[in-house]
Length: 176
Image (cartoon, rainbow, N blue to C red; front, side, top):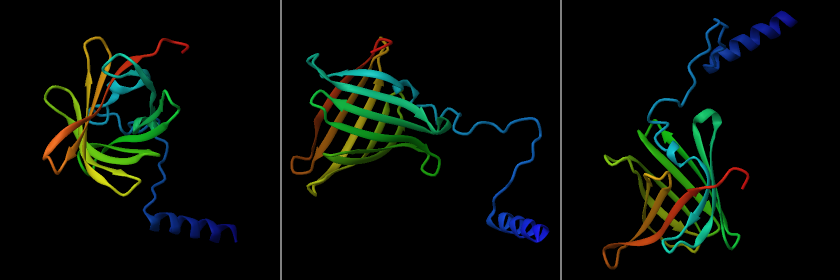
């Protein structure tokens, strides 16, 4: 009976395309470590985020998860509002993608580093009230180690991109 069960399991596993690796002494290379997967790593860290007037807008925790395949964002503004995003290199698209979810909206956009080394993502913002608009975000690593985050929303009536939010990310001191 045990032999029959083992044979059945082996046939099932091989039929599903699952490969069981034999130990060769050399571990396989870690996934998600090539340059395209690491393009957004400059955003990793614990940050205080300021508006363009220098007022604290909130804090953001940007961590590397899933063996380096996912960048997880957890945002809290100064009024206690929150939001989260999944950021990842999508090999099928050949681009970085972010999916943001908050009580205000869902943003889904994709892109890549431009020639200046900025991460530029474009897609749509979908508000929970049913309205939607084209949306883009640009993240720029500054010489002082801060990151500038610049969001714009497209106004179809005026045929113009309007500023939506600009944040300056400053690394938190250890222990904050």
